[in-house]
Image (cartoon, rainbow, N blue to C red; front, side, top):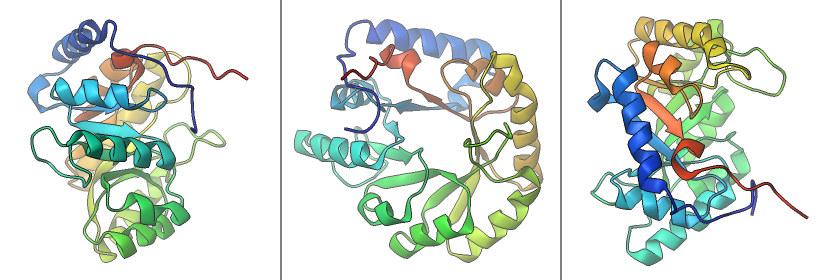
Length: 236
């Protein structure tokens, strides 16, 4: 399976979840409004089951193959295969690069497409899932290979994606490598853009920098390692 090798995650999960909630409560003026996307990449379906049992119904995956497999396994549990907002049902967020040849498999499962960077990606989604909720990934790092839409091109992309009958719900950003404080300027820029464009969702902040992101206006954090522990290194 693509990504890190899979490992058990149940030991210490409740303590880690309590710690994440404490961090959000300390960093946010309105903790109840912060949405937590539990990123199960590299942990196997057990992580998804733990999250759902704890009331974390929003699940994030970076790899199409992992998402499809886990969605099928959860369907076998009776958790429901199609994306939905019902109690106990997984609400899948796709966090990886949108590869047009994989959209057809993902479209029946994914509720939120985070990381849309180009109009061509949006068109591929719209052909399979008209009205889908998308977040535009903003390039706040300016580093090769990190991806994202340049900030000055975001308003044009928002308008173009809306013309494709997509629901542009907000913006998403990945902070640069380094200390959490290095993310502050980029996150502030994303919040400012979202305010200007009247976009309510700001998906910013992960395990290491969620406090900085919340201080700069994040409404959604994407947390994997802080919930499920360290990913085991790939061997062999």
